[in-house]
Image (cartoon, rainbow, N blue to C red; front, side, top):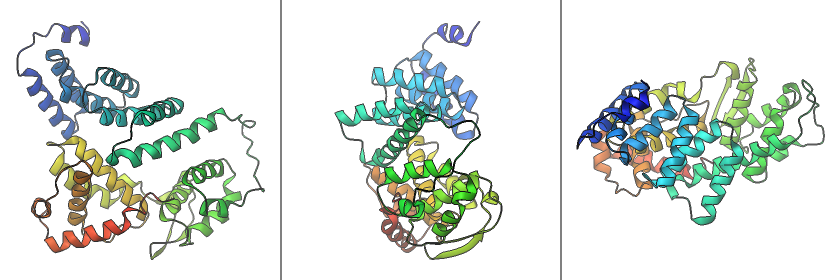
Length: 338
């Protein structure tokens, strides 16, 4: 008997969906994602319209790499208006992007944008994904060159193009640079990595490009009043850095059980600030950083922010919270600036 047949034979009992959904969230938090899929599915067999279980199953599909199932489930949720539409949309377009369905991402987000504004807390991420997907969709339409042949372009002033112009244009130039022979553009990238007029985020993207190319010699980097030599091939991914590991653990301990959606938004803010500083760690007390990012994500979600609550939750002084918050507020407008 298939899993669907077994679920179809479940006799609904009042309250069972709530219990199973809570257990599913607990398993998702503990890392047993397959069990979470089963528990959310069982919860929905008891109550097909259970919003928490529906969204939990969507997150579990995404976490287990079931991208196609997840995107199809998100479509059903949006058709039924199940759960928070924009939260479901955010996961949906992320799954489509991972599947390489960039044209569908563009069509979906442009259609939503035409009808209503993106919520403030999601607008930046959705606009970035829209721009990236437009570029990727365009790249797929462009006729490919002969296999194995990458002719260097000498008609582009790479440095000028990457320092000036809009974000969408810079992303397109980065995409084109990625297609060049590394030795053709490496000197320009090295110049930009030591040029503090180049934005920190652009420097990060260039450094990650060198990491993708497995450049294993030391490169000099100057950004945000920091200096140092790094071998791109040896750099850790953002999620493997000690700062990310420690701060994400603090956030998961505080939020994973009570509000997984807020946790996801807070972790997005954490990645955003670490991308800004990469490969340098931010000079800040980690507990204070966790508290400030938790507060920021809460405020973006429309919640009231009580400084003393966050100080108590992360066991920090109010003075430390305020200092970190001031620094974060100064940087906030620059974090996504390309």
